[in-house]
Length: 193
Length: 193
DNA sequence: ATTATCAATGTGAGCGTTCACTCATTTATT
DNA sequence: AATAAATGAGTGAACGCTCACATTGATAAT
Image (cartoon, rainbow over all chains, first blue to last red; front, side, top):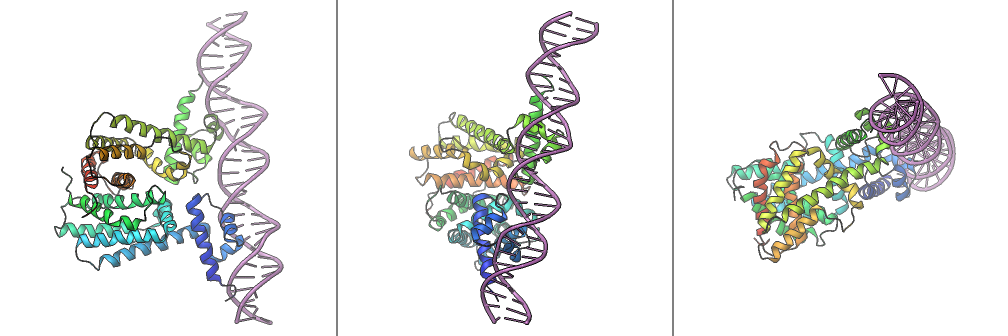
């Protein structure tokens, strides 16, 4: 191997990730990425087919890997309450470990989600599955699974978004138990006050 | 007045709104908008300074107007519970009335929020103000206002997002009482299980 | 009633710029 | 010497925007 190509690819990917988050994907040019990474434009095309493919690889790899991680985790527990708590803690840890990556997944969703085929497992489908099981077991009252999933996801995702915008200062992991409790309250209410 | 210019401006604005939501702002060209609206490119510049200004006008007008609407509404009620319920119902009605506009505000946020100065009143600041008052009155337990606002906003916003993606079929207004109940449960829990 | 005038509105070919991407060449490693 | 990696000037296409000109309709003068 000459001039570690893998290191260069990683460097380009990380640099692109940061710039995409700061400026948006379309607003970031190949020259921007190459310049910030300290490589020539041509080098980028030795490691990625195109700018689109770079953006997609950055998205799909991490988006799908996170879904697998969540699914593997939920299998370790028996009740919805435990599964949900574990997933939320994992989510918070993921955010704290790499906030830039999280922001990218959030940002790129609109553009890239069209390329996600229905049979792919995402964080949303895992959450819906777990909630549906919990309802079938009578652990929480019956309601529309999609609605329940949206509300739970909303609690966690919006807090993460606030954190990404520095509207919240604490680490997400410090807030995970509050989030778990709030999500549980949302699920155990049946909607009639 | 010759060849109703106001009508043309509205036509261009609505067309741009739809295309921006479908394809993204940067991905939509002036030619796209002009073509879809059935006018020449030059006509667009007769009514808007630039593409950026068109996107900003579309955003700021509606974003700030909605915040004013919410603030006016909350003033009509005395308790946090009533204020919150009224605001959520208003939010749902707004979405159902013009889902495309809502999607645009959601989509454009990332790009346009930098131009929103801190002293401008937004839906988020109104929500935070109302929640802070409710806590001061002892109506709900004390907790970080930003965190509480994020969770409440998340519940409503994510359900709206699901609806925008057709993951939920009912009108948002049909779900408003469920959302109100869920948000209330989030606020009245103190986070310690 | 007819015509002239004028400002508002609409047009689209063309301009300068920027962009993603290519490729002949150079550099580093084995 | 052979190969993998890196380079950056160059290319064609697409973009936002301009501008000289055409069209329209209201108003005023005849």
